[in-house]
Length: 96
Ligand code: HEC
Image (cartoon, rainbow, N blue to C red):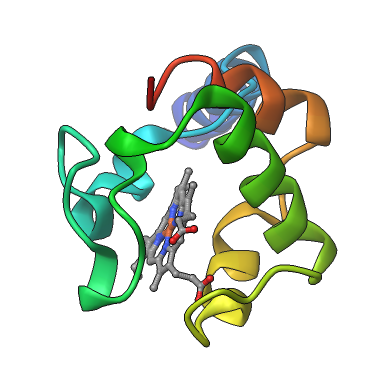
């Protein structure tokens, strides 16, 4: 049993390091599955933003320099763990 638990933890660790990149499922609860929801009635609809604007926004939240609607600290918490490269790459996959 102990061996199975240890093996599972090892497998999980490998899986999450292979799945580098932004976990969109952690975002869409607030932003909507199609990114068109104004998160918490505050944010812009991310689906209407350009890839470049999204990249700038995400890196700004991470750096703590962006706070458009007074909720920048909340968004910082959402993206702080990702690298700028991950945020850039993810921004290319959402918006327009
Ligand atoms: C708990 C709700 C919540 C979660 C979860 C969340 N966001 Fe946000 N998001 C917000 C709010 C509120 C704002 C507005 C922040 C501000 O004041 O600038 C925002 C702003 C944004 C913006 C900029 C929109 C604008 O108005 O300029 C982008 C892009 C964004 N979020 C992407 C993400 C991504 C990517 C994730 C997941 C890693 C995520 N969000 C997770 C609530 C959330």
